[in-house]
Amino acid sequence: ETGVTQSPTHLIKTRGQQVTLRCSSQSGHNTVSWYQQALGQGPQFIFQYYREEENGRGNFPPRFSGLQFPNYSSELNVNALELDDSALYLCASSLGQMQETQYFGPGTRLLVL
Amino acid sequence: GESVGLHLPTLSVQEGDNSIINCAYSNSASDYFIWYKQESGKGPQFIIDIRSNMDKRQGQRVTVLLNKTVKHLSLQIAATQPGDSAVYFCAETPWFGNEKLTFGTGTRLTIIP
Image 1 (cartoon, each protein chain N blue to C red):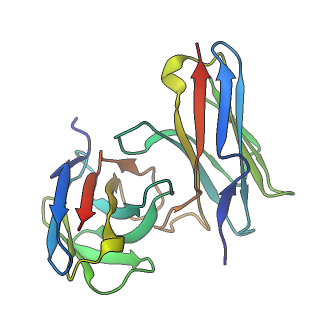
Image 2 (cartoon, rainbow over the protein chains, first blue to last red; image 1 turned 60 degrees about the vertical axis):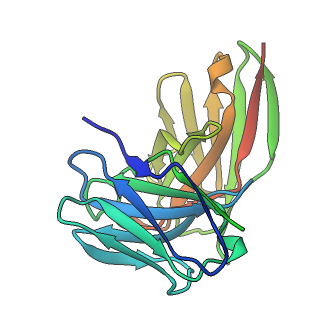
């Protein structure tokens, strides 16, 4: 059984650019959640995907968007990057739409200059 | 708004001693609570969870206590080891089936050899 994986591990972008982050869920998990973790803070919920459809969204602007694919992997897209988007982006997978334990990947560290 | 907070941002404990990390929550409708451990450069790692119909739950060297009267959660780690050094987060969801985890800021636990 493989755990949650994310790519890339680190990324540097400039303000105004667009970025795509990728996540492969744990084997057998059909639900993926994305979180943003600023330095020294706890993770903040961005959105969740269940069976390829968005299933809840946190307080993030529309320039944060996502996709989930038939194999349950997922992408997080951020347009028009701002300096405050610099953070660790975490993906978590779980089994099912009902509350199940969310298992996190190692994250992607994004730096916006 | 509703929030999950931690009493102490840092905690230092002698190796072999027991440690207690505390967490206060403000949402009386919170139903499910989880403790995560996050080591430097890694994603949060699930430690233990507890539902609101329980007061105590034990795992391997860890115990979670829930006091719904005062909306307080604690994580006890017995016989601490150097590998326990990390940031610990409590997280909650308001009801079973809700997709969003709300995290606190975190407590940094340092084990002194």
